[in-house]
Length: 264
Image 1 (cartoon, helix red, strand yellow):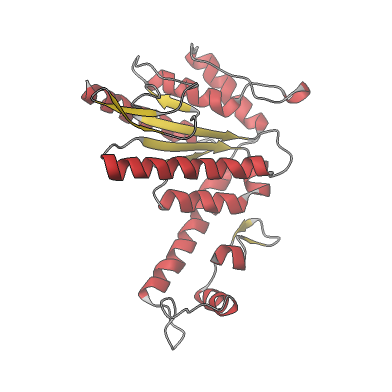
Image 2 (tube, rainbow, N blue to C red):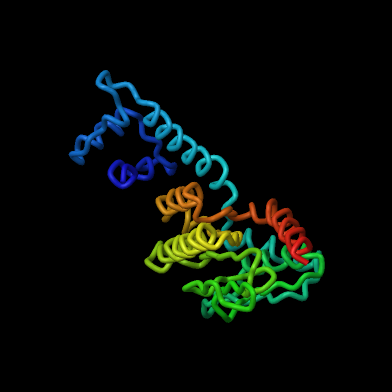
């Protein structure tokens, strides 16, 4: 609510806005809301107000200094994709994007993710393109079936250890509703998985991999803020931004392999 009212970004500066306690207090007044839980009668932040400002500072720091330099454009993603393909000689699927004409190319982030998973999965199967809804089965009975198909599941969409969504938009020229819908889809998956965890005691790891500097940073910084918020609300276990997938995904797959071995 505060970000919507005050703005997600610093206009003209190309960075995420970090509101002050005075701006937050003023926003509450303009919205005709009670700010006593945020600012005391002397204008000083309450404990909750300090926490709120600290969170805005953290979100801004993460996006401005960590995420922004890791986002890739199509040329950079292609270089990483081709390097991994030469080094790993993968047998996993390397799908094409859905573009036409000159923009038709491999889905770079998807291919990178698939190759890294295959290389670190210790020979355990992985479903790189589930054609079925994620379903949890216990004692031969279906416990829960999620509303959407995910982009990947380890080791399968039946009783998965991990599921993930891929949001790569290298050739998109605007931040349209389809991109925004991708954020909300991940939120929906996270809410369903939270319900499964709380009511059935079943924990499925949930990840979001996203990239495309122009789409996410130049056009969609407000949605990056919402992705970080979603992460801290617990609706996704980790978000890997751009080339962070190269840094972090091998270790995550190692964790999935350990879990799979313990299951057996």
